[in-house]
Length: 229
Length: 276
Image (cartoon, rainbow over all chains, first blue to last red; front, side, top):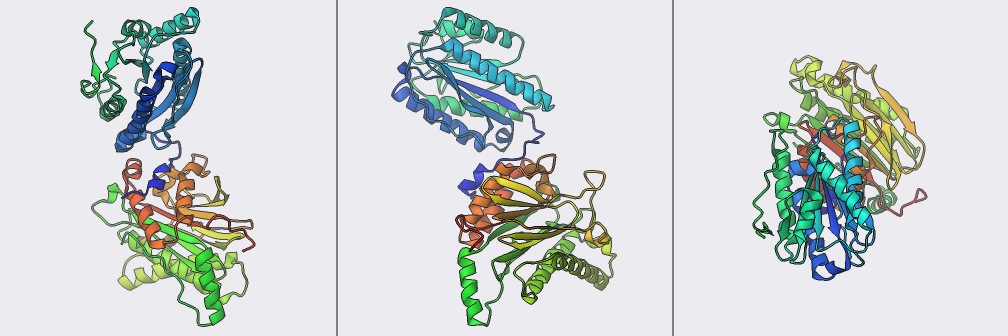
């Protein structure tokens, strides 16, 4: 039985293991208030617990959490799984999606450059975009620029976007347009199921040796519905 | 034997000393340690060893050793070396009336460890090199440390939360997989003394080095801090030894090294100043 406080031990940063970056970009605007944000917070705890149980993924995965409403903020800078303290996000304000995307892209870009400088092999970074609605309160040019950057990053294989629409109101067409990736709709508020899926998929990816970068995640039907419309 | 129990000093005869020792065990140093066999040695036995003791007057002594993988009896050499080195420091501390320990105590401890290993080899009719082992020893109190080392173990000290320094850096040869052993003579023995407040000390063998030290040989504080906090927060030595043992055996360490690993952590409960 491992002592709880010893789970906080971090290791000297000479881990020669491959790194798998996973940036969670979370919509924390007012429409996420109440059960949605609580559920998201529980989901982040589930992500940590689930990754910590996997000895390989826990050495290879690095997590970062960016929240956005009127402004975007790095809530959790890049950390190993053992150093990840799931935040308690709160929801209010408007939905500056473009600014959030730009901050997340900066995070991925900066960490990728650091790891490259340290000659550490990397899996292609994941950008998980969780949004429950439409961009609101932000100048259109900001979103247009972010969209352009995200699409280019995806096209140039610099990251893999996972756009996820939260709730029935989410505009999946918009999420698809800005990320050039197929969005999924989160069924109900199944954030815990979603983050278990993220963890299982990261485990599968980090345990793979084929080097193709192909993402073969766990089945998504426990948390998502592929849009048919 | 994977877990080596601490050997505490027998109760002193003098009632005044006994009272002092009770105080010491309540307020003094808390020690935990474990040696774990690495996955690369799964078929054989653990070739690391550790030993520690509390000394009178708020002092402690501890040692870790890493028996050479290439030596058929390296693990026995390591076990003999740590117990003899600490016993020597216990004898030295009992004899000296001084509150501080000096470099001569450390040199004597390493020498008697080397002698004991040699004696075992001769008694068994084996070459001494069959018992090749590194050795790191440290002893001290609230305001000083003395240490001695042959080989690639390491001693780390702390003078407060989050502040760690290398007391004894690992001594490799030119190549990362080569080092020096007490059975090869003591010309590679390095000793040192630190005269400053000390709130925690940790000893590691080579198996943990990459996990606990940066490439410039400075300690990685986020590695040591939770371990020190755990040990200084636990009144129960057996329980904290078991916790360290379980943690070293756990998936996070196993995922990073296949070598035998040894860790000894010594800390004072927070709030105890050097004046106590």
